[in-house]
Length: 168
Image (tube, rainbow, N blue to C red; front, side, top):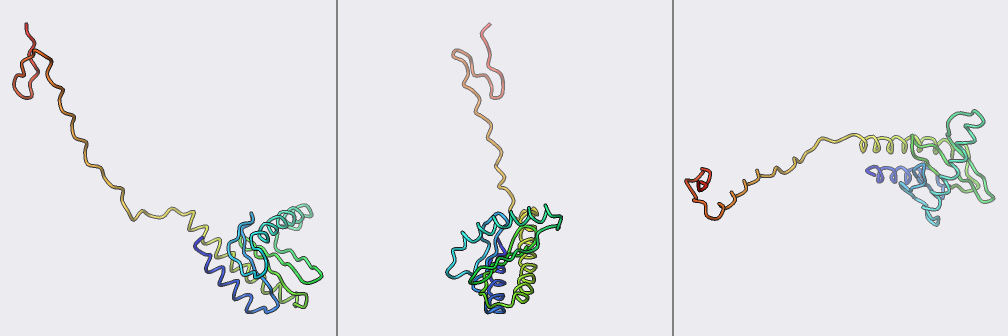
């Protein structure tokens, strides 16, 4: 995807703004890593788990009439895992230490999710829009006419371009 570098830059800026983040990952809704800044965590596994959690969260919000998915927060003994919607087809997952200010985590996560979503959606729109051709197809030269078949045995050749004569 053309926006990978920009998404990674956004993840790194987010980690610089929020020092208690220990990892940040942008993934497609089906679990493919778009960009990651997750030292010590296997990004592909985290993206796959995020997709699974996203599936449950989407069903939960639908079943309870709470509208479309926006975010998911999981707290463990040693910190948080927060997942935010990022546009129409991506998610942002953040790993945070237990001492983080959860309000700040949500504020920064929502903002970064919106920016990443805009980058990913724009890249998908560009990919879906047919681009004008800058290279024209090579034109083949016209085919050479086939050589005329040789005259039948015993026929006089006649003049060029005329039909062969048959004996009468």
